[in-house]
Image (tube, rainbow, N blue to C red; front, side, top):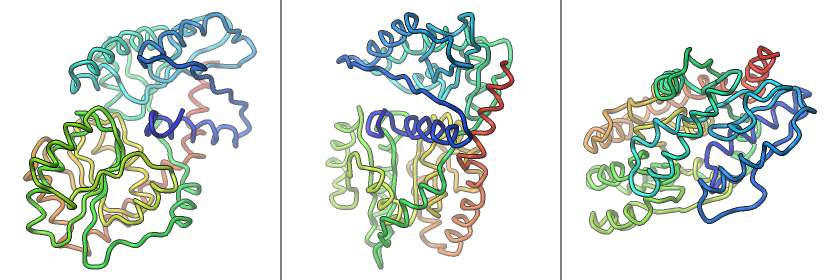
Length: 341
């Protein structure tokens, strides 16, 4: 339950809980109270202990991703499985220990969605992936991710930083997993540093790919062109968005992508790939072919050389993101729970 480990999923869940409370709903949030060296084992132990806890005082329970499989289907209350992403879909881009642990998580997520009274996903892409991967009888209903626009805009105003004069700053924010394809962004930066004066690419986050990415950074001799910012607070993150001229995430697998909402709300143009749910979330962005460093570099350069296009796209994103504001999405979420009763 923090940004560093929970990334956009944490932000989405916390914002949803806060928005539901503002609608007058009593919400208790249950998460592991003790931690184990292996996160997947920690989640399984947490879920197994849930069956001993009393749940009959609630009108409904909600489990995110695999969490909740042990109480789904119990008599006395309806249970909703809310998938922030589809683990079986995400693990297709993972290998090694991460891939192995995610296969275990996908097994329990399958149990969860099959036992639940209903399943919701955050995008059409995720709904179709869940139905296929977990052999669901019908397509899950869709409630998108949300963003607390008032709170986020307050953070942006409270942490003012202006883009560097004469430079061009590209921001990327994510956990460093293979599916995020940050190595493609580094390869693009190696091409662009000769075409964009004072190019700065700032990578916010950390994760399993950090060592590999730093090694590639050295091999490409990127130097100060690319900065590894690391994990940051929400205040520091707002400052990073303010500093940026453009947001870029070349991910090939996104069930939704909260960072795109943050970038739009910050008034930033976006370059991403035409993969997974991304075209649903940012249809107005510059979308390029996945796993293509040259295409990504061209997309970034095209916006660099067309400031009026950056302005138009940023304005379109500012309008588009309004539909994902927390009060509106929380009301949709609550309606899905009411459908169960």
